[in-house]
Amino acid sequence: MKPKLVVLTGAGISQESGLRTFRDSDGLWEGYDVYEVASPGGWEKNPQLVLDFYNMRRHDVLKAAPNAAHTGLAKLEDKYDVHIITQNIDDLHERGGSTKVLHLHGEITKARSVLDEYRAYPYTADLKIGDLAADGGQLRPFIVWFGEAVPMIENAAAIAAAADIFVIIGTSLNVYPAAGLIDVTKRNIPKYLIDKSIPAVSGSHRIKTIAMPATLGVAQLLAELL
Image 1 (tube, rainbow, N blue to C red):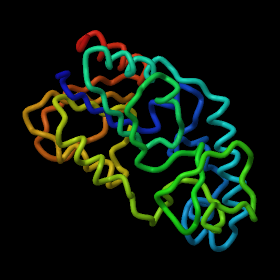
Image 2: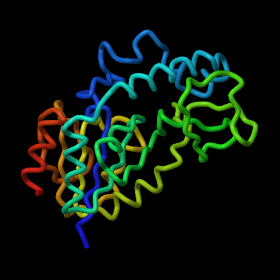
Image 3: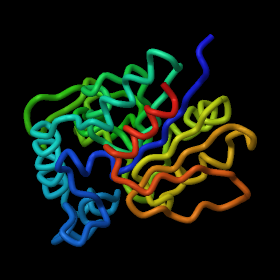
Image 4: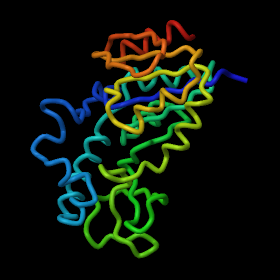
């Protein structure tokens, strides 16, 4: 049995692939009121604006390529049972070679019906009003918006609780419930935190911090774990 290595990733790991983060001063969301484009209320008010916004985000993701942090994590599968839990909606982990990826906040390359939060549909053209799912509901991005429940959090918590090694990469640890996953891990296991700016961690966790961008930090992680 390979040791179970669980990695929680945030926007910082995809930033080096050219995808701007939510909190960047020149970030992707600048010019948009978050709640106009990423909340149930915004959808009710102007669904076409929301679709246009996520169509643009999808094009950005499709143009981006996995970086050395994504591909480096995939290399760990030679020695470990690697599970990626990501807050990111891009597919760069999958394209980087990781085989077990759980998306907490949904996936930009998929759509879902307004009537069913669990069933996803792949799509290759921009979404527009009038595009319907098999159940007759309007298609919307397969994304968890602000104010919505996170359906995959229980699965993620079960994975984190079983970790033999826990790694956090490129997240501010300000977004819940994802930020609370470290609190369900076993206390005595090795834990690593990789980020350019190391965030504060609640509780009594003993964590090795690597204050580097994701690509350099993962390279150091590989040197220690492989």
